[in-house]
Image (cartoon, rainbow, N blue to C red; front, side):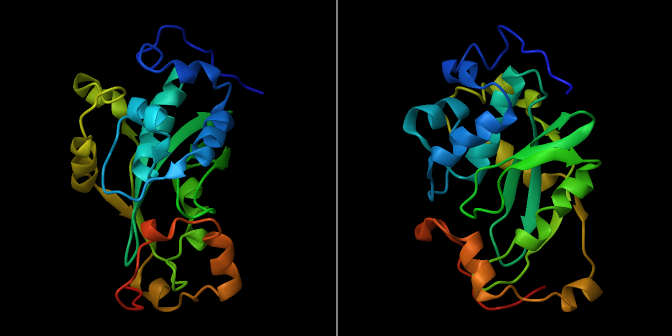
Length: 217
């Protein structure tokens, strides 16, 4: 198995000692799974996440990207856009020339992906059938190119006490790639109750998106 050399004295390691406990990407996911889901509209830095032990999906992606950096990966995130549902942000990594992902989510099926996907689109599509709102509608519509968070190092994004809405604002401005057309949307099936229960087991109800009406669009 190809391994990424663990780098000493990286930007992230200088800020968060807990990163030293992570041996591989899945250990980062395990840490995120134990955190309480943060249903507040905010974006804490990875250091703040480590301190208060809560994270929403955006905060989880930032934390994972910083932790991946300490393992020798680039700190990359990808923005997923949904309709009539919450958007999602994941941290991605490459291992053995394949893509994998780490994520914090209020939906159990939108988290870790093993590094077995040959392309970024293939990785993103692994989320499609599991990306549903509470009514069972499949809502994922597009995704961004990977964003290297090192571009925000000047804002001290790993350990700042300030809200990181500047990164969220950037994600709104960049190009996203559509993954489904109108004809496909019109033929999508609605997930049944059993599948919905699987996806939302253990979810924090306050943090769940409530659709105004059952539209697909």
